[in-house]
Length: 118
Length: 118
DNA sequence: CAGAATCCAACCGGATACTG
DNA sequence: CAGTATCCGGTTGGATTCTG
Image 1: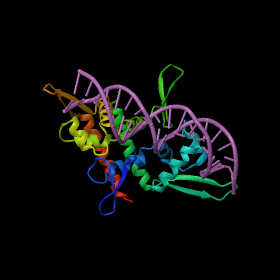
Image 2: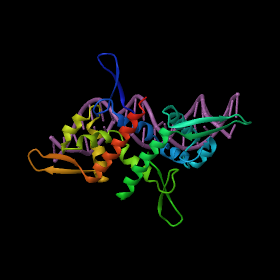
Image 3: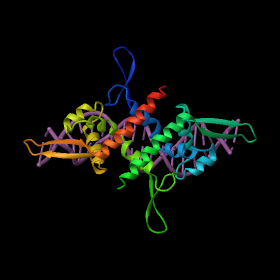
Image 4: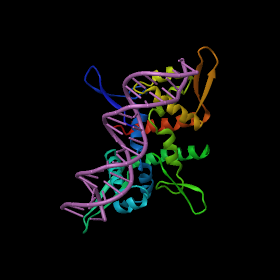
């Protein structure tokens, strides 16, 4: 899913991936297509969830992966990380507007898959 | 992107991936999220293209990958393989209705990515 | 509780060479 | 032309352990 970074003659970075110009589709895939990503977003869709709860909900995954994907999603503005200063600390993750917009796409994908079910 | 297959108590196969029930989203991602997949679909979107031409259009990829993805896309009914019996043989790939529907989703993804450009 | 660090096996994908 | 076969290094991701 990674597109290779090249440096053009003017020293600027560009993404070569076979699309016309730096391709937004591949970029989007890199954000939404990662493993467990859809699941995580899905579980946050209507209410905030705490880290360990989330990790437990995503059966089959490990805390390592959930953590890594959460960080990635946060970096791209799809989710928000909130620390509640209790003892021990609680951390809850919630979805942002951008994340909600992504959910819409995932739902389209779901419909598409189901319509032509094999 | 592979979801693990499990057998439930009634002997049916199910996909455990953290979604509710066998998850169409992950299935869809497995079809559209593969490397070079979007590029291939994109280049076939308005006209059939022959194998070597396609491989050349997808800069950065190898014939191996294009071949593999084409087979995958064909198996899932997104593209059609047509052999023209000349000498030497020509093989052209074209998009199906289902493939066109997928293009629609990819365009949504593109718009989503661009709207919140980082 | 909420993670980070480490280890390692499995898979992925690029390069190259070969076939009908 | 339209692929397949083989090799192989890099990345992925699961298991486990450790920390504040």
